[in-house]
Image (cartoon, rainbow, N blue to C red; front, side, top):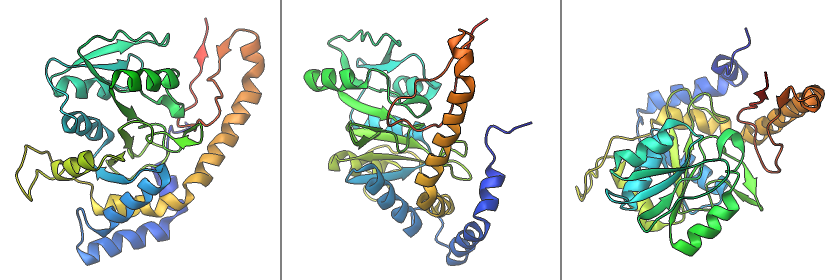
Amino acid sequence: MIKFFNPGLIYQKHKQDFDEAIQRVLSEGQLILRKDVEDFERTLAGYIGTKYAVALNSCTDALYLALRGLKIAPGDEVLVPSRTFVASAQVIVQVGATPIYYDLDGVLNFTKKTKAIIPVHIEGAFDAHFSEIMDLANTKGWYVIEDAAQALGATQNGKKAGSFGIAGCFSFYPAKTLGAFGDAGALVTDDEKLYNWIKGARNHFKEDASDWGVNSRCDNIQAALLNVRFPYYEEALARRKEIAEMYYEGLKDLEKRGKIKLPDNTPGRIFQDFILKIYD
């Protein structure tokens, strides 16, 4: 059986570096929100092209805290695609707002209550209607919170996913293209006020108790392991693209015969997954 993802193989590829990182973190006793986390945040912000990054426990927490930090609350509506992971809608309900779904046709059923939109860059490709979404959001004054859990490194018009809206949210769950060896996520932003609020919120606002926070700390070991993997990330994306091209070439005849529908090979996408449709 071919595994969907194989963290053991990834570990073996960089075993010495991973082992040294783990031993160093444990020996130093710098376990939570220390230098490795700060280094990872700087690397991620630089890679995406934003001013700030905040390492968190998950992309779900990043989405939730973005909504809270932007004061999305009961009575507000947030647009979200119907084809996404449950977390994209779950966080809207958790802050007391109402999710309003849009489908692949891109029709947005917005009202005066609409305050934000969460476009989802699924399978490594930008939301199919992202350009129109950004234009409309700018016109209406909506917050755009990008769910880029599956799109680290995807580009459109020379900019990376996560850098267009007020916040970009990422997952480093082990199955992602840049996976940790446990749970991890992050939020990126150019908004200093949102950045500072989320930095406090992820650790219960321990420094000033100005609001109710959560426990969404990123462990230093996970950050250290991600720091080991990050320098090889573009190389890994290139290899995924090579494999995807093999699929496109090998399966093109089946698509011509109407047996399958291959994923769109849009410029700038990364291949988090390669999902095709099979017709009866």
